Length: 119
Image (cartoon, rainbow, N blue to C red):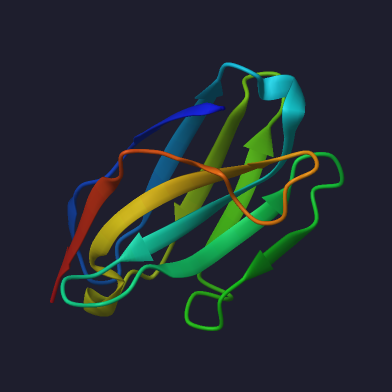
């Protein structure tokens, strides 16, 4: 499986920006897609953004569309999540995920990084 390590989580104020990073290692040749999910206290994990590893096609949840941007650096095997105009409701643990060729969806997960947005 692909190994994922996230970084960049922090405590910020509403309206601030933050960039999360996720570095992939081991079997990166098999990457098909990467994405970000988040889980707020008491809520289920939800999809935030995804990107195709080869075509760079992106997709977003309605709640972050226009504020967040996912991008990737294939040479560094890293995916980023640029988060702008942060809101208190964006507070959650953010997880990086990877999907490999031949698998639908995502089959590798990072340990998560906390993002807290104060009002």
